[in-house]
Image (cartoon, rainbow, N blue to C red; front, side, top):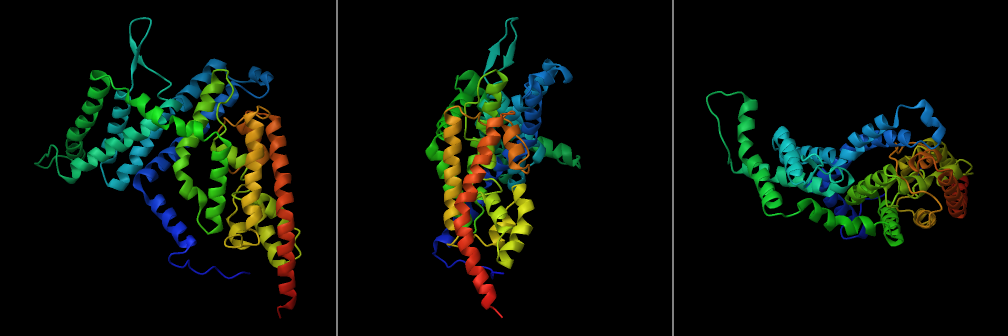
Length: 419
């Protein structure tokens, strides 16, 4: 087997890539937002299940399912309120990093987010919060509310500003009173801005990030994501660890797709994580499912063993055994297909969805499913998605094959000459 790669030389591209990746992965606010996205995914997954049953791929299934009103209620309670869950998860993550009071941080963040909402007047004369800004439309304001609340609480705690109780009061009561002043400041400031001065904070923050969500749907954007991911993996940096900044955009696009389908409209966005996982990164970054299938039939003992060990994980989109066992990292002989195959696949997939030939993904499914199943479910039962996925796999096999064959022959020659 190949020896481990030596440490990156200071000043080299690989060293700089590692440094940038480490810095981004350690940035507390990005970490908190990443954790907020991940924390909300189980609820999105559950909401996707309700939506898939509410609007099943085969209408005849509705006769054997619960009433549509009940399934719609489940969807709205999960995906329809995803911003609330993301706000709580983000605040909890950042509070742990800032060593702030966890309960106060989460409740204050939720209060800030809800107070920032504009209220609407009902026909009966009452008022209500708009559901759209608590769902997909409120994700970025939710992240902002969480960061604002936790940072204010942390700021006050560092300076020991707050109500201090003495005399042996229970710790939970002491912490509750200590958080009262910063929580009041947070809520009152937002209340004054929104409900007294008339500033639309939720709408303004959403508008600020709207170009990023829509810009992600361009061919240039999806190509850039794939090329950055492949380039980082080639130097041994986990691509998605650095691309964590785009996860909120992916979640926002997916939630908007779900909201559109729930109202009878087609999914408006291509730029979702499901788009990359099921149609571009089959087997993992670099479309390495094709590599695993080819290595099974390699003549070199080393590659054949790697293929046998890596093909099952690759079927379930885990490719570290292939990337480090072949190896692909820092291997110029296998770099071209690792970079070019996903670039071609993402271009074909984007064109197919942009021109309406295949329905874009709008259902969150577990990323460890085999690609055909994931493609089918994520597109709401669109068989054309499976055809596109299989076509992409064929393209990846064709692009990987000449490079794997050449590399296999070189290793086989080396094995024959090695005593």
